[in-house]
Length: 289
Length: 311
Image (tube, rainbow over all chains, first blue to last red):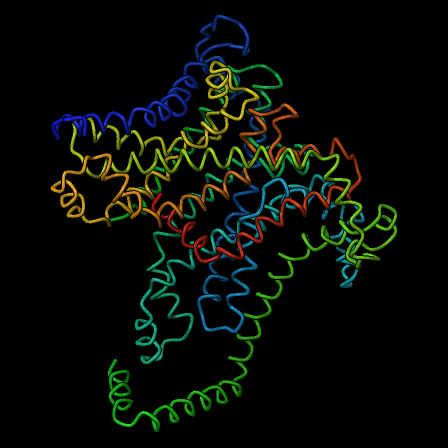
């Protein structure tokens, strides 16, 4: 068509098919990322026509102002939660991969929270954790009145309450990743091991575990990045009250509420650097091939 | 191994007898296991953990479902885990639909979803086609650009992205989130590239000999063969976009532009502490996800696994 030579045609289609996607990639990924670094050394307030260079001032402020970094420490709650979540999801993945009756039903149930709307799922817990709410009533109904607490008001448990909501929502994702790999391990390996007299733990230790090493690495990374970028659950359930503010919330607040885009950019750069560091580390430790 | 071979051979010699024997062996093995306290304990423990997990998953949304059928007074005077007086009390649902902007929210999310999915599929398949079929200067660079972009977490860069969207005049315009859903979406390119590898080059070659242009090859051969990949991408993106809260919160704050997520988020300011009405809203938003999940379960598992492992 159009009497073009194949060569010309090829060139045309390469340009036509790449032009828009690459423009989008650069304007929405690379340009903002580079802007972030630039803005982090300015005092920009989001409105001023000029951005004054102030060197590493923002970074120094970050290092010296513990109130800014406190939300970063909340990451640890979510990371502990994520590790528990990984162990639980591996346990359940092994179970639904075995011959237990009802395994598909359990798999469906455990996975469903992952496909639910983030706001809806978070609000479910906002309602669930209310004082004299469903959780308290449920505990009372099964005779555990003594455990009742102000789940979202008491600063000593509130972060764990939120972590539990997060585990509830994301456990199915880990489970399905583990399940996928477990399914790909050839069954005859287990049969051979059984014939040799290996128990369930030995089968897990010597067949399952080595086969899923890479996926564990990937999942630990996802867990780490996920803990650093927690946003929705505390934003919706507590709006960051009672010491539940996370680093992403603090960054957005610094930019959009306090109009300190310079400092917010420095915070975002810090987060970016941490995330990239762990991604590279994961590639080195668990890299494929 | 040897035993397995032996038994297959035995099966072919005298199937009936062996099958009965195997059934008997299995039964005997089971009875034998029942006699072992160790095995009994383990199995009971496994089921116990599964049942506890199932309860933990179900109780919170179940309580919300119950609340959505209760009157406000009923909610405060009865146990939150007791059944409502009537499952036919739809007052909360009527009220939330009338005052909660839910119709508007579903329309907006629908538009965003349709536009984003269409453009993701068009651009994603086109990029994958060019990158997997042609050799050209800068190709390595383009691939590298996509690899590195994947490392940049979108959640961190929004402080700067906000300026780009503002400069484009897209704040409070659906175009903002649509652009972000298609532009910052690198994992999908990988899913398409992965599937392209499985489409034999001979098909392209044969069509070329017939005189088909490259565009025609893309349109008539590659695109139809990419259907499974397209299905995967559509499923993954639908889950992501329908559930996303971050982008609409930042870029679509105006009331006319609410999405499902932000409409729900605003409930606490619209309905205050009318938890029964809010519960009805939550149920309305959860039901489509659950229905779609139950019908497409297999594809969703496959899609999630592919998206995460290959990405």
